[in-house]
Length: 304
Image (cartoon, rainbow, N blue to C red; front, side, top):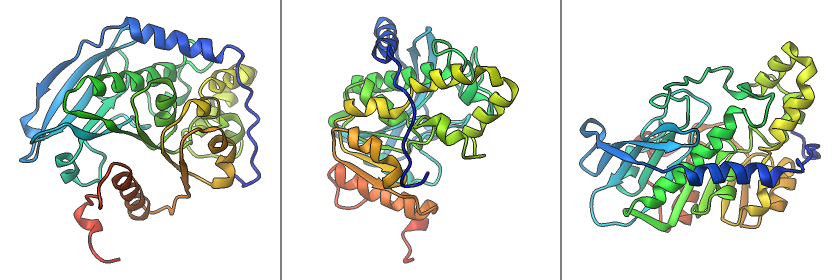
């Protein structure tokens, strides 16, 4: 997106009512958590659990919970779902030793591995599943599942409620922070739903290319698709976000979004380097959550 980019998405007239219905359905659904210790995924510095909990539908969800050994409460990282079928205890490439400092909860949204019964998400195809109808769009459930993950994290006595960071590589942390109180910091990359229709027309990268694929098959549904994704545009959630945030992207392109957010926002353009971007994210989180230095993976600790 160029620095002069201006979103053309129109806020739906029933935007607030749409999300109020989702949250009301979630509040009517018992959390019903079940935890099972996983010795194979535990270490000398943390204990890991397989967690089952219930989202709207009702739909039975899954997550990995890692709790440091020792006396809590502990700062917490909620690692929100990405566009992938498998959810890990901690994102691949990050320092496993972080699990001795933070509670880490990594939820699987409906359709992802271990939450794929009765529905297994198609990839590619996930982004446009049910997209012709806002009420039936898969990501309606995905966002609700992220809010349910916040509910679960806040139910744990090991969690320091003053330090709960929602982290993800898409828009979901921002949407979750706006809808469900509890997160104190967020790291997000507005890449799925920020001006989706504008950006899809300029790219061949997935998952936005799924929009183009879908409209090639169903050109008559362009208006319906645009209406559905408008309910998920982070621009319309931004005024409800009042916590410190690190956003990945162009400062100019994200200016309409960051200008509407109420908390302190830092925008960082990707260096297209897992090391450089990952190092910056870990340093930002460490500062925000009260640590002098991050815990880095061994292959990042060498002089570069």
